[in-house]
Image (cartoon, rainbow, N blue to C red; front, side):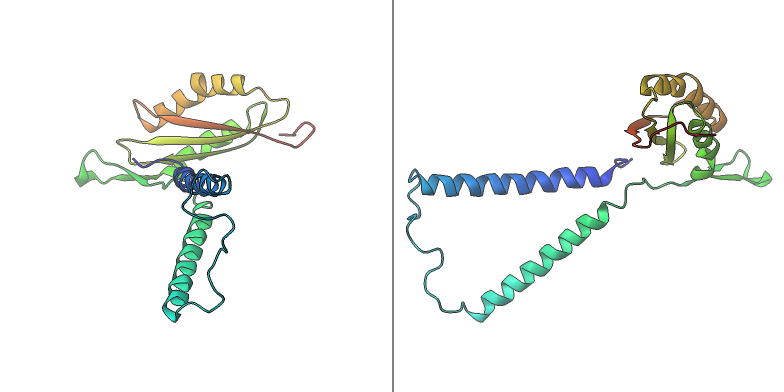
Length: 190
């Protein structure tokens, strides 16, 4: 199964490449300025002459700029694709008698509502991704300022997740839990 948070992997990769390039450029500039590296003279002009470059250079620069712009736009759009892809599960014991389909979103809706009603939870979102043979549950739980993430996690692992596994007839359901903290003040009414 693919990672549940694809944009994070993309961000880390792009930021690592950009960071290495910027550090290398900074080291090169500092080494040239300090005269440790004698490839370039620090007193020489950055661009020789004032004449325009050949026309093909301008076209290459324009193409590179468009490609970089499209890559940046793709990176920006990847930030909104935070939710893993869900599927419809098929329960079928005897094809002649019919089959049952269960949307993964519908399967976790009661679980999410139960989690939202837990003391100290401000909001909760759950996504059940992957096929029935290898599912994965991704939880994002927003905790009130006075909420206790340890207690919420204990309740999840001891009560809620075993009930969900039983309801979905699964032996194992790997889950990732991301806790966020609410900035809202005051008690929430249920």
